[in-house]
Image 1 (cartoon, one colour):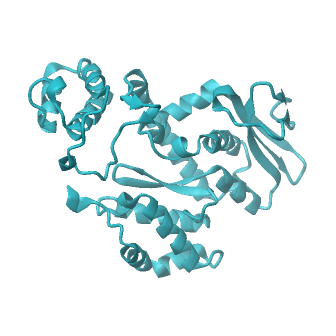
Image 2 (cartoon, rainbow, N blue to C red):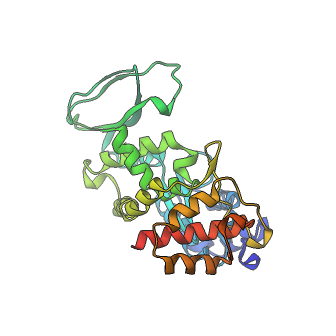
Image 3 (cartoon, rainbow, N blue to C red):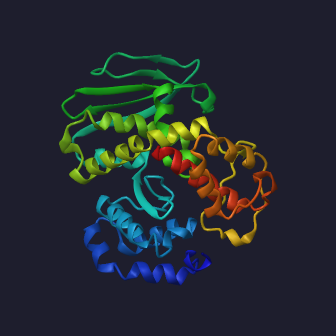
Amino acid sequence: MASNLAPVNVKEIDGALSVYNAEIEKALAGKIDKDYFLLCAATAIKRDPAMFSPASRGSLMAAIFQSAKCNLPIGDGTQRACLVRYKNEVQFQFMFQGLIDLAYRSGQIKSISADLVFEGESFTWNGTNRPVEHQPPWDREEDLEKLQGAYAQAETLLGGWIAVRMGKKELDGIRKRSKSFQRGKGPWIDFPSEMYKKTALKRLCKHLPKSIFPQMVHSQLEQEDARDFKTAREAQITIENPAPSEDGKCLTPPESASPSEGREVKGGQVEALQRLLGKLPPDVSDKILFTAGIDGALSECKDGAKMQQAYEAAEEALVSI
């Protein structure tokens, strides 16, 4: 397994990206300096070197080309776009500010924004065709425990307004369907406030004139929605059978780690795995344990990597039932 780990050598990453110099430069169409774009992409990859593994490289390059076509650098620190890895698949995703930038580039929008609403803030909803009245305190602290909802609104050059709002319950339903939330890493974990805003902004985009965004942007947003709904069943199972955690942090080990490292079993792993196995047919449970290399009683297993492998296999098995 160690042979499949992503290289972390800077020159190797830069060299692999340079192979696609001509194609990336063509996609950028002179709107962003190619060398700067490649530097940003290399920076993003170095944050999660497993993206560069042989199994992930094809989807990684496809995601980078999407970034180039949208003229939204990844890894430049502006949080306009990002790369998200789901096991061996790397995906390009818009962030909140990236969608704002794309809307303004169209030349059809006078103003566009999205914001969160917290308990105690002055907020008036005036309907879908009038601007929202929101007066957050200038020094507010974004305590997501007090989040009430999110909204997005846009004014066209012709003076018309389009507004949408979403309550916290609906927002959290989408968040819990997200693979990044379920796996304990990714934009929903790293930038929750921005993702709440992006969710409202995506809803607004569906009501804006189609001509504002290129077709590839609409396709990308539809793909993101499809992934969310595709994992709804998985989200339900994950919520009903939470993985063990300490201090609110997911204990899922890095996917680039090798089982041979012998990680210790963390508190709650045995109980969490037992809950999942108890909902599966005995033959399926036995096969999962055998494949993970767990012999005898679960309570006697001291290999955290084996426990994690069995837990993920049990999750997948439960989703397919």
